[in-house]
Image (cartoon, rainbow, N blue to C red; front, side, top):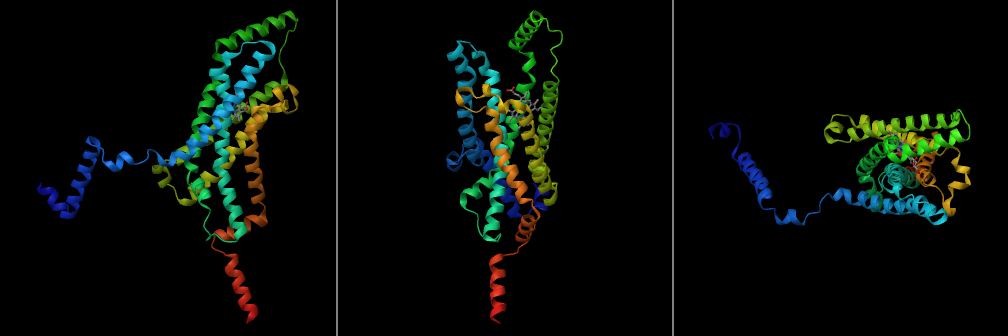
Length: 311
Ligand code: HEM
């Protein structure tokens, strides 16, 4: 083609041809290299964490919510498995993953404070973890969205309708006119609202992690969204779970077979992360980290002072 020859050099044309044939070949006959290459290599660690955490939480909830009533009172609650048990696993995994996004940053800050420099390499496990944060965050958003769908469908279930009718019947039997419990009403209004806000923030974080969007932001804008908004999302979701729990912390009926309820397991890691972050935000530590990240090095400073004292 004459036009092409005018605008492209020979080298560029050869590359263009190679590129096209490469794609064609890849489609028709996958090359050896592509057959052997790992699929989704960046997702291996996050998916491992998801499977390692979901299965035990599923079994734990199944034992507490389904097996326990069956064994103790012969009550059949197997209908709970598809929605109610699954909807315990989803939020616990989601909030744990969200905490795992922010935990390596805290460990990295601790590491830098300990060594007084940003030039010392992080251990490989911390490095790998830091590089998986985007995938962990996206999985957390995915699980939180599913949790929202499952939660919002609660009142549409047939089991819920029967339960509501039964409660109404019992209320009539007890000659109770009004079943309104003020603190329970507030509890639910607040925790559902916080859940929606938390999910909205997670959606913004997920959108800004799309390369075309993140490339349109400056580093400071991207960092501002992913760090400040991320911590705010973690805080809102933790308060959402805490308000959901309300006074169940001291309710002995929650400790089925002496095991803690799932909300306690869910909020454990997020609370640790949020507390550590608040410690790192203390002015003395924050200033030191800022200095280290701007290139200050405790070791060279020490050498300098040693040199000047010798002089
Ligand atoms: C539209 C958004 C959301 C709605 C409507 C919602 C609704 C709910 C509901 C109804 C429950 C009680 C579940 C039950 O009775 O078993 C709950 C619990 C919970 N939610 Fe959400 N939620 C939302 C978003 C989130 C988000 C974004 C997170 C965190 C990533 C989250 C974490 C939790 C946790 C940890 C629990 C406690 C689960 C347990 O251990 O029992 N939620 N949520």
